[in-house]
View (tube, rainbow, N blue to C red):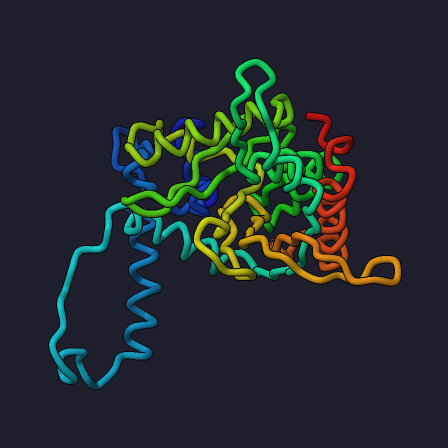
Length: 303
């Protein structure tokens, strides 16, 4: 497409293309007067992904088939995973990922969280650790605004700094992994975040959530705490520039003031876009997160 050719489409479609990492100027419109539609964007992304896959398959094609070695079964790829595949491939191929691993001492936080009682009913209050993490992460984004940004076009040398705080939460559903957003977390208390977490999770699992809720995020949290595991390398949810992976907390002996003490530690893995975030920034970001969730968490989170 010529650089001088006028592009006919809506702001919504332009945003959709940016979120999928597609250059709108390279997309041919199929609607009247060459107007670009959402379907045109999807076809463009899928076409380029298929070209990339075909190139790899041609380059590494095996001279043997799987069936040459025994019985096999061909099944359909789940729809959600099939839809997510181009997005994940684009993110991995576009963003130079680096992952910073660390651990957070959450002993006081866990002691507080597991003893929460409703003063009226006397019943135990259940609040997931993710609610506290989302709140702490939001505080971090205010302190480190580069982590709440996007690069729409590297060539123009511009970074979009977001003034909103929408935290993506990776939800494991029977249909595949979904990442709905919790909006305006900076305006919510921890209990409200926990309630909204439960709400968006249920909507995602029942396929009743609006598609728009999967877009427009600041940063994403993906947790393996309920399953197990420590450190891993989460893929950034493009066009975001960072994602926080959370493992399962465990007890660890830590040497404090001349003696070993049993502490509860939380493994974290922060993947970030190395084009605009360097290692020192990532380390400072994690140190701040550790402080927000540490001994003085109540004061830091002001929930």
